[in-house]
Length: 354
Ligand code: MRU
Image (cartoon, rainbow, N blue to C red):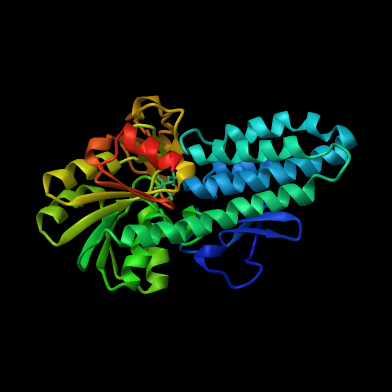
């Protein structure tokens, strides 16, 4: 993977670019200090970029994987000619295994696989697969705009809100899920301030959410996750608004570690809890949160900070990077199709079938 300066002035909506036949990913590990892109020319580069957190956030991971399939097909066609489909199994498995929790990854690969099945063996697969990946990307942007409007419609009066991790343009095809709701609500004069959890250990709140909101002129204050309950107790918080990596068929929600604690605190303080996620994040094959695979990452992510060890030598670390918030703690799931209030299995199924 090659690191590059931006091809042109960029916004948070330009984190995933297809330029001159290559996939360019804004390197989120360097923000906010540096704006640089990683160039991916193969599916292996793409999978590595997802695993290494160059790109992160459930919808963004799915979109990136869709472009990775285009790179895989180009390579298979060069190597195998009209037998290119035979060369797709290995890169597809590599992409599928890049990160386990965000279901958007498997969803996007399944969609690309359906398109592959329709294609004739003799024609160049790159143009139709690129068009499909671009449709996945464009549809996600449109879904976020729709979700933003539905979510903002739930906020009755101007209030401060809390968000967790980064569920903004950087985590999606653009605009964002939770930050899409916040952006829409802010445009309607409904957001007094955003309290962003800094989000240990990767600091997505400090480095990414704050970067996006400052650029948009939306007032943002950071806090350590441990401050969230005290902030709710101090009053003035109407909603907690978060994204999701996978929503089970009964409405249980997997999201960045710390979300569950936030939901418990919100319920205890009478603060409402909103999850904004496209229907591509809802996994009807997962009956409940217990069936959602939770990624565990390296202990060093917790034991070290900014490249240096901060924990006592000899200490280990438990580092699950997502948790599951049970549906009964969720006041509303907002998708591009509308709102599921007080979600349960029946309401989620009706929403998906609508
Ligand atoms: O580990 P990450 O940074 O990929 O985790 C991302 C999150 O948990 C987001 O909140 C989630 O993907 C929703 S993004 C629209």
